[in-house]
Length: 269
Picture (cartoon, rainbow, N blue to C red):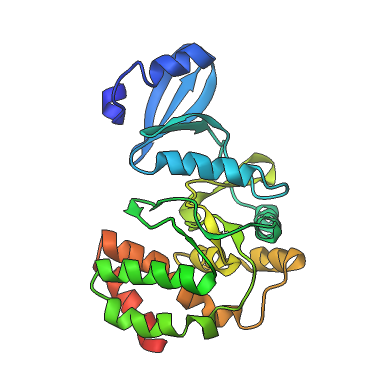
């Protein structure tokens, strides 16, 4: 079973789970390189592949911020696999949306010390985790690096040259970094959970932009967010700039329509 999961040896995971929590059972695939397993009567999720060690550290960092969105507990981790608690799903409610907005704003309001740093991966795409002196340097480097990998550096360079006039000056926040709706779970008790982070020091609008890339952000989420951390003037006009990063990531990984979406944004800016 462990070989099917892509884990190198049974001693590494099933034995560790059994030793720590009790007998393992009910292995079930629930996504690409993601499985659900029961250990000692406790339901868990095992995720394998590149970047899981960074993801584990990201979950720990998010969990340390009081009032931030809930994240699954890291049970075990190593460079090849990550074991977290299972989140029991529920149908989304207005209370879920309010909780997500308020808690995301609380996360973004907490002090953070640096731009960049954090994860070396966004999904399956490697990125440079180096620390930068300011927002312009961080986002400029990330945009140019991704654009160069998909042949769009000439189109991105003029935008990068204008970033200081586009991105408002602020202190960095700890951001989730890969906050699309697939990484938001609606749990029981109206609890909103975040999974699969690519944390780093960034601008809060980056998470909001990503959240609206593959599905509209409910007004209740934005209203609740604004109650805790008011949105800055012009934030809606900057959304597409921050969306360029995930679109370029998807262009690097998949090409096709994602490249066309990125090019459409670049024509506007």
